Amino acid sequence: MPIEQRGVDTIPEEERTSGPRDLISILLGSNLCLGVIVFGWLPPSFGLGLWPSVTAIVTGTLVGIAFTAPLALVSLRTATNLSTSSGAQFGVRGRLVGSVVGLLLALGYTALTLWIGGDVMVGTLSRLAGLPDTGLTRALMYGVLAAFTVVGAVFGYKLLLRMSKVLSLGMVVLLAVGLYAYAPDFTTAAPPGTELLLGSFWPTWILAAVAAGLSGPVAFITLLGDYTRYISPTRYGSRKVYWATCLGLLIGLLVPQLFGTYTALAAKAGADYAGPLVDAAPFWYLVPLLAAAAAGSVGNAGLMLYSMGLDLDAIVPKATRAKATLVAAAVATAFVFIGSFEWDVQSAMTSFVLLLTAIGTPWAVITLIGYVRCRGTYDADALQVFNRRSVGGIYWYRAGWNPAATVSWAIGAGVGLLAVTTPFYEGPLLSLTGGVDCSFILSGLTGGLVYAALTARRAPATAAMGKRGQNVLTSGGDEEALS
Image (cartoon, rainbow, N blue to C red; front, side):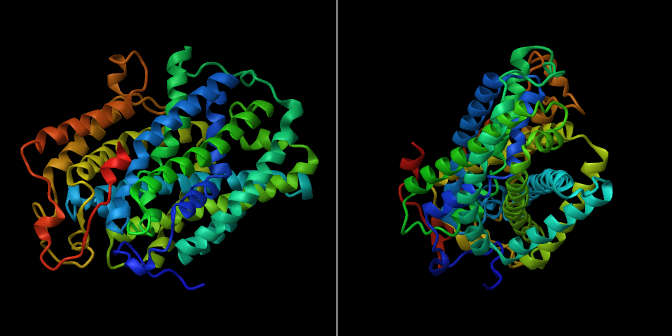
């Protein structure tokens, strides 16, 4: 299979051969891994029992999907990734805001997946073969997983799609067997020794809904376009792509996260997940658990690393996607080592997802407002001006930046950071929200309202304005798909 040559350039129509089923497969197969499963452990680690954990995860996931899924339609129209597509609102240079947000999201989730997967692999091999559980063996396992992840990410979309199709079947079987394996120890009570993290039920429940449920779909705000850019709008309508995105995210996120809650309660995993998960597994399930840790981690981290390569390619247009992917892999692996030896998993995960949600949400809201205003009609050629190292086009705005969008995002992100609560930091606005983390809502509302106010009297840049001889991609019922 040849290495994918496409970076963030426009995908030609003849290469857009994927469909809604492929989108479901990649969202399902890539998420059935320990890097997503571990988020189901967060609510029990916060001191919540079974049903509060389940309702928090389901509620947060549904809200996140309703907010995130429409972004899949943007790249369906632009034939490039979402950060590049956001140049229609932020400017062809201002789209770097989306690239940085996407890079940070993918970096964190790649590191988390390799971290958890490596720890579980070392633990299972320790019980199976007596492998010593030391810092050296963990470092070696992180390196092995990273190496296999790089292969998938460098070869690109087609290989990752094939891997996801296999994983979507194989991981479902492994998780189903896991339900039986951990059944004897299952309990509905929170793990022993855990107390409500924020002192009372509802603030802790809302934190769990955001950190474990909402964060899953929000992680895809810049990733969905990596897949839908390969779907042709002339073959598949927006409605089909939209509902395929919703279904893929719903099943792909809820199945592993609820499995994580189930196993966390069965293994009585409070302050740590990987160790109790391995210790509570019956001996006969260690090999399936090892396979799930290895294959699932490579599949999920491969897609995240692929996205990182695209975002880094967007930031440094002279770099090829393959070279950018290798650099991103080195950085992600370094973060794994730092996280494993310096931080505890719960604090690192919670802080990471809350901070990135606060920063990324206003960017997504502004991008969606622009999509609705231009009715899904984009000038694909003008979006590529920065990549060609040229100037001009309808998305040039002021020196390649749209000040209205950039300022709106900065204000929204700033308000979100002031309203967030993490184990490492608490924003001053928490005193106004009763200690409840409302950063997601406040950042999105603030960024969206400021952008709407600053651009209320300004006509949106549309493809028709720059149609002279340029490649224009238009919508086909996008408003209906969003209604």
